[in-house]
Structures are given as C-alpha cells and as structure tokens.
Image (tube, rainbow, N blue to C red; front, side, top):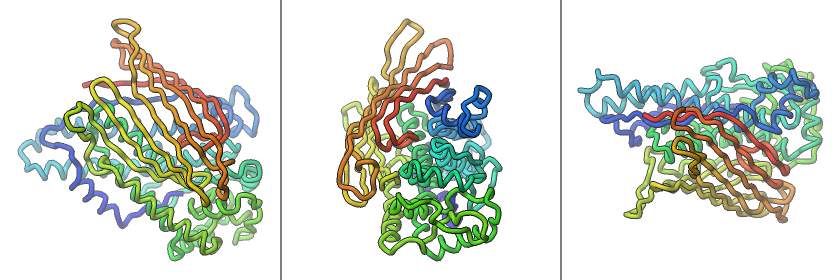
Amino acid sequence: MLHKAYSLLFFCFILTFTSSAQNTDSLISPKIQLTFPLIDAPYIGYATRTVNNGQPTAGAILRGYANPSMQQSLALTADLYTAVHYGIQRGVAKYRRIDNEKRWHKKFFNSSIHYLADFVLTYSPLGGGWLHEEYHRGVMTLGKVNSFNGMNKFPIGASTVAVSHVADEDLVRFKASDSKSFIRMQVAGIEGEYLLVDRLQRNNFFYRQSLMFESQYVLTTLNSALYVLVCSQPKIANVETDKMNQKEAEVKVRDFTGLDFNGWAYDLFRPNEPYEARGVHPSGNGIDRYRTTRHLTPDQLTYLNKQGKLQFLNFLSPMMFGVRSLRIGQTGWNGNFAVRHLLTSFGNDISLQVYLMNTQHRAALTYHRYKNFEKGYSAIEGSMIDVPLSLSSKKNLLFTPRVIVGMQPRNQDFMTKRADFLGLVGTRVDLVSKSSKWSPYIDVDAKTSGWVAGNEFLGPRLAGRFGLAVRINN
C-alpha cells in the first residue's frame, strides 16, 4: 500500500529543476538499453501454482505471467521510464520553438515535462507504484498467496492503493510456513522502488544515456522515506488505518497488510505469533489484518521511527541531484556513488555503492552493512558490466558477472547475534550482433540462504532467466 506525500510534490519539482545538470542548450539523443525477461525459473513454477490453486498445469503457465517475478517487474518498469524519458528528450531536442528562449525558460519547460511524466507514471500500470505492489506480490507468490494489483486500475490521485483479493486463510498459512518471507513481503514494495532508482542510475552512468531521471529519483525516494516515517506517527498512521477499516467491510477489497511498515515492525518482533492471533476485524468479518502504532510497544515504535529517519540516507548520492558522473583526476576514470537504506526480513541493509568506468572497463562495488536488533554484519559485492568476448567481426558476447560474499543474521532472525554465510555468484551473457538491435541473453545465479535485494528467495537457490535486450544507439 502506497502513501503519497502530496504536500511535497512541488518541493520535488523545484529541487529537480534547480539541481539538474541537464544541458538544455544542447540536448543530446541518448543511447538506451531495454531488457525483456521472458522466462524466470524456477519462479514461473511458483506463479503457475499460485494462479491455479496449486496445480502446475501447462495451461496455467501463461496465466502465471499475471504474477511477474521481481526481475521481470523491475525490467518492465525500468523500460517504461527509459522509453518515456528517451521520447521526451528527443521531442524537446527537436522542438525548435524554444531555441530562442532564455536558458532558464528551456530548463523549466524540460523539467516540467519530465516531472509531469514521472507523476503520471507513478499511478500507471508498469509505473513506479505498480512496481511497488508487484514486489509485494512477488514474495506472496512464493507463499502461493494469490492477489490483485490495484495499480492496474490506473488510480491516479489515490492516497492508498491495495493489493487485494487476498484470502485470510492464505495469510495464516504463509506466516505459519515461512515467517521470514512473510516479514519480508511487507517491505518488499519500497525495495522494488529503490532498485528502480538504482537501475536507472546505473544505466545512465554506465551507458552515458544522459536521460533526465532526477525527478523520478527524488519523487520516489522522498515518497518512500516519508511513508516509512509516517507509519510511526499515531495521528497519521492510526487515523488512516481506522478509515480503511471502516470502509472495507468485505475481505476481498482489503489490502494484504494495510500500512506496510506497521505490519513489518509488528511481525519483525513477533515472528512466531500465529497470524490469526491478530483477532477479528472491526466489522466482525475476517481477521484484523492492519496494524497501527497502538499494536506496537514504545521500544518497537522507536525502532520503526528510527528506520524512517534512516530512509533519508537514500538521498546521499550526487546522481540524485543531476551529477551523473564524476571525473577522478587525470586517471581516465569516471565514478559515482550512492548510499542505500533498505528494510529486510531481519532488519535493514545500509550500503555504499561505487560505480567506476573508463574507456575499457565498467565496474560496480558495494559494501553492505546488514543490521538486526542485536548486531551488525558485513558483506561485499562486486560486478563487471558488459565484458566483451569477440566471436567474429560482427558478433560479441557480453558478460556481466556478479559476486556477493559476507555474513547475515542466522536464519534471518531479528533477535540473534549468530551469523550465517551469505554468498551469491552469477553472470549475465548477451549475444550482441552489429546487424541487429536485438540481443538474446541468459542470466544465471546461485545463492546460499540469505536476503538479496531483488531476489524473492531467502533460501538457497539456483535460478535462471532468458530474455531479449534492445540497444538503440543514435
């Protein structure tokens, strides 16, 4: 469920307008890359069973695409934002009527169009709000909990949007069988939104796209941070929840959790409490799903409030404010960085990401600091981007390997000082031809038990994806 911070939309626009480094005097036609993951296994098996009452029939495979994986929904949303901003950029560049206008007039015109587009996309199918809900649904699908994404109704202007048509019995079963995934489910929404920011920033940096995504970065980050923060404010969270309970007499129209972070904090401290212990809904029909600040102890509320304040770490990046690349002296290297704060199945992950690139190499390095209630744990992550291997004068393979090594709380527990090893190794391989913009690719990774952003599975898993990528160079 997505709470919109309407009062700060104007602030977002002004911030984007004044800080963007986009040169509107010489707008360029950027290079773009779009990705279409067609098959994601073994996730597709879970989706097939979820939409077909547990039966993995051949006819249900196609219907399983109604529940896309995290990687599929992220790719579709990133593609949409990229295509829209690419189209706007090309359109403004060709709009000769503003050639003689003052520079700030051009900048205002350009920023206004981008900001309006990002605002509309937030409420659109395949947009940022849709991605938020699909990340919830991706985890729910692993628990065979079927649902409906309310963003598919294009609810522009709505303050809350539900993942609805969820049965109480499914939530009871899901928490009893996999409480850690149940906890993660409730915060997966903003995980998806921050990964969208990360994907757009990476592509802008590594492919030198020069697309004006800053309004999307600021709007998404501010909205997400405020959403977490207001969940600890009784005058907002409790009033909003009471309103929802009053108008939602039917179980099928209710959201799966209400305000995401009240439910997350409640279950984080109570992983073994049966879901049905929440009691009866105020209407007398079904389980009382939604948690408020009244259901949290003072210490638990303090913890939630702290996480809301830490969310503002996500603003710590030059890329948020239009600085898309930083020259590193006379080394020939360019770089950039971003700080992320994500909520997890065991607490949080605060990370520092560094992007590096020269004429021959592209690399991303990340230091993760995972934290539960008792202790911090560390991990490092590294990846190379599009390492070429020539097959012929017209065809190349592009390798994008990725490795994560570190420690996380044992069994994803919130209240432990013990650790488990976390490891992930994977690579994506694209077959690129000079004669075609389209490139088939495969993406394979294997992981130990543990939380990895953008990966639905908390247990050990070997997964693979096949899809098509399109590269447009102007």
